[in-house]
Length: 112
Length: 113
Image (cartoon, each protein chain N blue to C red):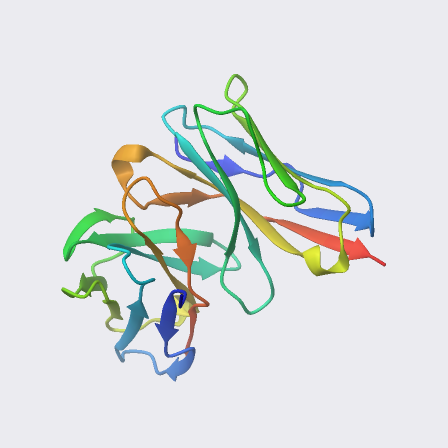
């Protein structure tokens, strides 16, 4: 059974640009969450989607957005990139509320 | 407030010894706790979890203990191996907050051969 798959694994963007990251959850998992990991702030929750609806949102500016498709795949978008957005962006999935949360390998974003 | 904190940022143990990694949480509403292992350049890997209606749960070479009275969580790794070297995170979850996890700062475990 395939795990959580994230693409791309590595990318470099310029300040002011936007970026879209993709996540395919484990088959059968309907919940997808996104996290940002930086050395200074650690792992921080961005948002969660369940059945195409945003169920929860962390304390990030509106430049960070996401969506979920009918097949449970999810994308997150960061617009007007800033140097501080450089981070490892992690996607996690779970079957439903009562189940274990599994993470993907992440997408490394560098903003220059 | 919302916070999950680890007591020790680094832990160095000898191969074959047992390791204990500690974690404190502050939200009494948290009802689900997870330990993750993260190796360099990789995403967090699920190790073991425990729900608030339990005090102890065992896996393969790992045991998680939950003390709700003092809001403390620990991960015990038996017969620690070099492959166990990584950063370990505890995370807490509140049922009505869906998949939102609050992570601790992490403890780096170093195993000396």
